[in-house]
Image (cartoon, rainbow, N blue to C red; front, side):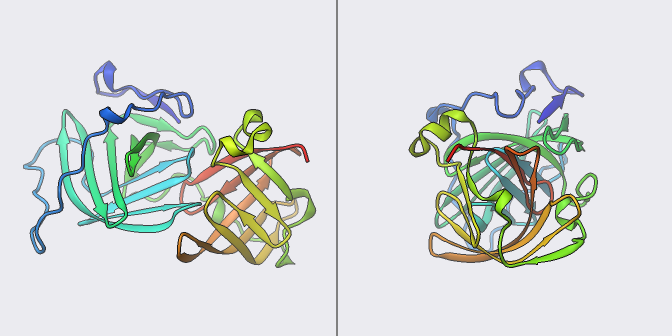
Length: 264
């Protein structure tokens, strides 16, 4: 993500996606306890800043958090869908800070009013954001109001030109990783992807293609049935080869990730 300063202090500039240092554990703000049942999250008292209902998307790892009303819905290639209760939403020094939790953990979203470019899709967003998921992060990304449609045409809506069947083509098969180091030592990274004729494998989830379609350039539109960590879900995703050795996977909205091909 490339982020442009609009009306925020220099200290609020985010680093480019993939180059920002991970925050130390003691820098992660603890999530407050959930309010009693039926108690509403306090309003913002009219403070200026990003709206309460927002969508934050990151590329590495592949997350999208949608905040609407009293719920934060987190989705991602390897997480399925989680619905968390919002426990705090307020403006702090011009930044929208949202905390949410469920039985499995917590998610924090922070959104700033600075323009943000998605380096993978090239889409321009009106805000920059970051996510902290179960104490890990921050993961940097771009953000928009929930009422705003995704910039540009989402790749997942690409109309297929021909049906291939239920098997992934040979050109896509193999092991894919974030970089050469992860290719050499696959156990050192949890971000690898393995594509087989009848499966896509992530660290903690397995997807089986239900339908596979392709356009004239070989870009795939695949409906996967996923299973992982005791959960089952379906996801419509677009797989595209950039050259022979780079794989792009696009999901709902702005979600995208890229991996390089590892030698057999």
